[in-house]
Every structure is written in structure tokens, then in C-alpha cells.
Length: 247
Image 1 (cartoon, rainbow, N blue to C red):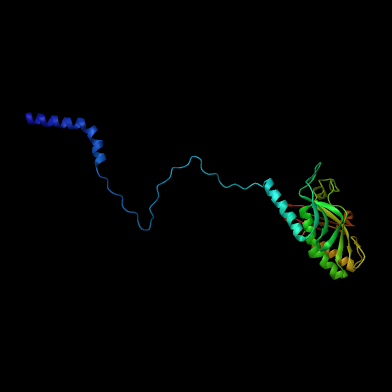
Image 2: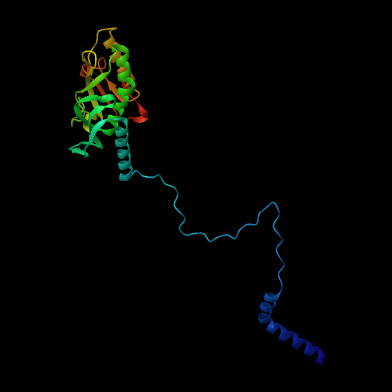
């Protein structure tokens, strides 16, 4: 009876101390090492805590005034390199009419005078230079064996609506010019008009009008409508899908 009572007391004492002894025993017990990673699977790095503010997704870069100024400066630099004579003018603001990056153009490459000197947006001056160099001058040599010396301008910048009054004219944005004719080194001037069929003048005028279409977005002249019977209207109006009007 005494041994049985002692054993029961010992068991009771151990059970009473178990909540205290168990955590310490487990803490001191050795842990089995983790197996090495498989050769074909690199060891994964410890995961980093997830940020509560993840970086924003990429968004389109908005065009800024600095971008516009850079584009304007680049256009002016190209005019200078092409050999145009012009004066940089301040931005035009006249009611609803305005011209970004305007220039007063007085001559084109090859010394071709612009008469009168005309105010227009810089890209229009650049397009005129390209048209004169790539189209008008070579065609004048083919048809007249003479170089053009003067480009006669009717209207460049003018604050007005379109003839039908539907919206602002491209002239109101400095974005269009009306070509009235040309002067040449070795022949009489040529006015834009309905020319005699199969004549060198008709061939010249038709060629420079058609070849203006890849350079300008709108080309209107004799044969398109009554309003353009005595000049070529050229402008850089932007339309959806790069749509162009060439008549």
C-alpha cells in the first residue's frame, strides 16, 4: 500500500509540473535539418513583406508644354538648315484664331522669294520648302527649262471661317496657304488658272498640284470647285485615319 501510494503521488507531481516542463523540453529538442534543394530547382529566396502601396501601373505620358516647345524649336532649326529666310514671331491670339509657332516666311531654298512675305505655322513653311525643292523646281526645268524665282502668295494666315461658315478656316490657324502663281528666271510669270489643254503650262500646273498631295493634307485648285479656280489651296489639316483631300 505504501509503494502504491508513493507511485501515485509521484505521478501526480509530474502531471502538476507538466505545463511548465513541456515547453522547455520541446524548445531544447533538436529539430531535423531540412533536405537540400533539388539540383534542378534553385533554392527559393525568403519572401519579402508585401507592400501596402504597390507601385502604380505604367500610364501614358501626357504631352507637356516642354514637349511642344521642343517640337517648335526643332522645326525652326530645320528651317534654318534648309536655307529658308524667316522671322520667328510670337504666338498669335486673335479671338478664336491662333497660330502656334508662327514664322514670317520671306524666301525658300534656292533663293525663291515668297511674295509677299507671309505669316504661317512653322510646319507649313517646312512643307512649302519641300514642295518647291522636290516638285516645283524640277517640273519647271522639265517644262520651261527655267528655275522658279518667286512664289506668289494670296492668303496665308487670316482670321476667318471657312467659306461655308461651318468652322474655322485652316488659314485662321496659320495652317494653310493659297498659291496664286510663280515667276521664273527665263520666262513670263505663270498664274494659277485653267490652262490651255496639252500646253506646257497645263502639264506643269497639273503635275505640281498632284505631287502636292503626299506633302499636304488638303490640295484644292482649278477643277475642284469655283472657289479655287484661280489658286492652289494647300493646308496641313489633320483628319482621322490620315484622310487627305486632293482635287
